[in-house]
Image 1 (tube, rainbow, N blue to C red):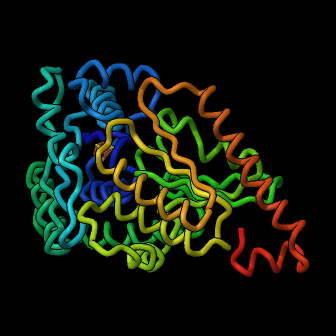
Image 2: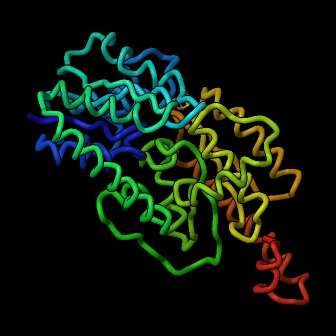
Image 3: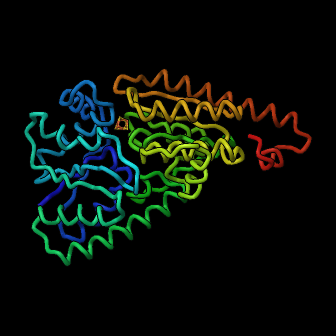
Length: 336
Ligand code: SF4
């Protein structure tokens, strides 16, 4: 029996959990290839025009897996932590796929509702295991191993690896060059999807720039950033992005600038972008928002990236020239 896992959406967070879970149950698990034009176009043709680019890409991955697998895994994420929720488009994804009229194998679409803790996840895994006709004890054992795997991967992310590097054991490619550190923030399926993000992380790294993302921050830092908000945010993914952004704006010695990568037409990200931009502007902190969709062109992105990097560098050089203490003291005094 083979289960296909689409390399899209919350794959960038939960893939290690599913991979370990299926391995413990002795069920084969294959991944769709990294997003390419064919996958994106097939997905865009199969879903409604109003869907955001990440949802279109997810549909393309499901279609790419369909001829090769017995089931496709498309969990219905409702909530991943108490009193917060996942975007309704992700909640409705299994229905959108079923109603698309495309020929495909059955979906494994357990409801994942962790609003009351890990019991919700345990229930989802039990449901999956029941569909695959596996016993209770092997499911319980797999559940514990899967959680341990998630903790192991989190350590790797905090060490500076991207999800793909942490999941597949590839090394981070370091390149000496500019002494800059830039935060690239956004929903993980935007930041790490090679086609949608146009490989932004790798592009910056190739220039010798150190990149940090929200997933590489310890959760305490995210909470510290969020503590500045007067109202609680109810959307888990946006909380991560905004928490990380506010943390960086207020700990300016940690990064030299922030790039926010958001999807065109995403309501949650437009709110986060506005809030973050206001905070960054108030602190005179370098900030740039890039909005992407399936029509985005590489040339525009490269031009804006180069301009942003040069602005950040110019700002650092100006501050260095003005400081009587030199670069080291300047950065550690909290001035980018
Ligand atoms: S949060 Fe935004 S980008 Fe993500 S699935 Fe929902 S609408 Fe799309």
